[in-house]
Structure formats: structure tokens, C-alpha cells
Length: 77
Image (cartoon, rainbow, N blue to C red; front, side, top):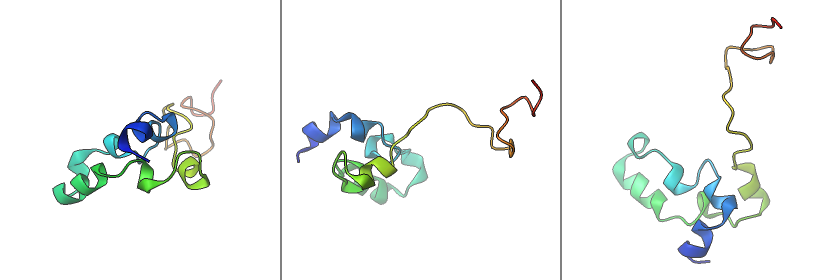
């Protein structure tokens, strides 16, 4: 699979671990450069179970302090 066909695959580009989505400042520079050589998340093949497990399913904000899962209103309607 070549870089061009993989990079245009929405299963790669929507992945949390798709190399261009990784923040450069969070990795040692040599590690980040190695990651950028990968075609998809961890070199997974688009559509496989491994690929699906690392994809974003929602871009909505989550309130991590909300342990009850009631939303940011603190349980109030």
C-alpha cells in the first residue's frame, strides 16, 4: 500500500494515531520522524479490527469531572 492511497483513506485520516495527527512536541524528534514514515495508525491496514479500534468515534468535548455521565450541568436539568 503506498502513502498516497493510504493518506486519502478516511479510515486513516480520522484515526487518533494517524501520524500527521500526532503532536510533534509530545515526542522526541527522532521518534516523531519515524512515526511520520508510517502509512496509517501503527501501519494498520484500513478497515481491519486494529484500525477500527484506534479511530475517533466522536469529536465532542467530554467533561472528565462528570463521573455520573450526566453532562456538564452537574446533574441539573
